[in-house]
Length: 212
Image (tube, rainbow, N blue to C red; front, side, top):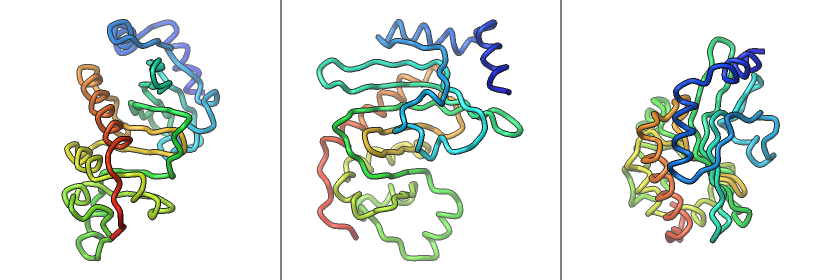
């Protein structure tokens, strides 16, 4: 029910963030939808870890566009999850290209538990030459062997410049976000450009030849 009341509130009173997204769409060449039901999303989006949970969900202030020369589709939106006690909002930068076929993977900042395990145990490093990435990030993938063909040193080195970015990929989709934090509007285009840089080196960088 909380998402329904939120729909009504945003229909009657548009907050400053919604209005700012509208101005951003006009300035940066995006189309804009004020909100979308999560149930209406493509099946390829619904399976990501970010969207787990049985409570109400909404996509709010959805910026979207398609590149004419490559058919790459981009969306930027606030994902709202109406949990038991409060609403959690995460700003998502989503890229989609039908030709992609990524393995399921999640790259996330290391929790204290992951740091302790790394300290007391021996780590298998995908890119031992980029040790600062492995200090900051944990990679989850059901089939880690595939990652040596899909990631590359340039990508993880660039990603390590930001210690808070999450990345998920599966099939034709890649998501970048800062979990449970809306990106301030003053930083949104900067974060989007950084995600574009990550995407560029991910697609056009060189894969590692062996998994250590």
